[in-house]
View 1: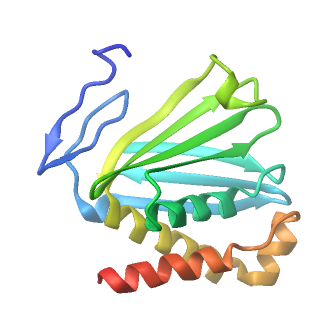
View 2: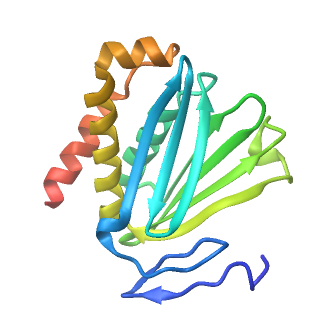
Length: 180
């Protein structure tokens, strides 16, 4: 990795960094938004202060379900989880790595699509390390907003191929309730 591009700064014992900038971490600054933008199309936005990343997905993957299941895997003690948002063409790869009480979140774009793990051509869109519990709270808020906006039936109708990840959302909600 290019040392100049991947500067890391410790802020109140947490590292908040993207390849473009480093910013102080503030718990209330994590914002996740997921919205269905059309039949079988979605957009996920992650904002941490001034650091922003956007990933879009088509119905070729269960984008929101895969995201929620990856978070449940981390809650259940897995050290890492990886999933994709399929595009037409291209693919976003998300990778979560638990580092004690923190979570490293990486997002890469593979313009050629296919299998990201086998491709060398990628663009890093995000690489941040956050307090794990704050990130999981933000995921719970995002899932609750999606459910409130679309409902179970409305989500199914608009996403086309996959239902809302209700069981994963319930597991995440239970975890958040246990830490608050």
